[in-house]
Amino acid sequence: MTRAWILPSLFALCGAAAATDLLLRGEPATATTLLLVFLLLAGVNSPLIFPRSIDALEAQRRSAVDGRPIVFWRPGCTYCMRLRVRLGRRARRLYWVDIWRDPAGAAAVRAANDGNETVPTVFVAGRPHTNPDPAWLREQLSPPA
Image (cartoon, rainbow, N blue to C red; front, side, top):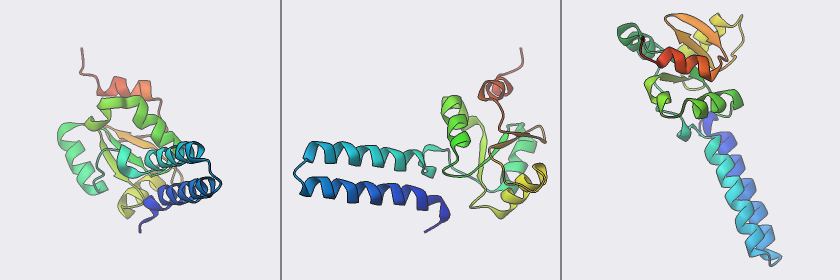
C-alpha cells in the first residue's frame, strides 16, 4: 500500500469499526450515518478526487509545449483539496504531480520552497507559486482577451 492510501484506509477502517459497534448496540441508523461520513472522509482524502497524476518530467515536457500550469500536490493536503474543489472542471486543464509518488516532483517542490515540501506548489510559465489563490489560478487558465 502506498502512502497515498494510508489515511483513506484508516478513515474507512475506523468508520467500519465504529459502525459495527453501533450495530451491535442496536442503533442501525446511527451506524449507517457514521459509516457514510467516514467513507466520505476517506473519499475526499484519497487520490480519487484529483485528475490522474503524471510524473514531474512528463508534466514539465507537456507544459513546455502547451503552457499549461503544473500543480504539485499530495493526498490528504487540505490546501490541495481546496484548490482542486475551487477549480472545478478547470482542474483537468492542469498537470497534476503527486509528490508522494514522484521523487522528482518532491525535489522540484523542495527546490522552490527552501527545502520544504509545501503543497500545493503551482508552476506557471516555469515560475513557482506556493499555495496560490484559486481565483488567481483560474485567471491563469482563462484565454487571453
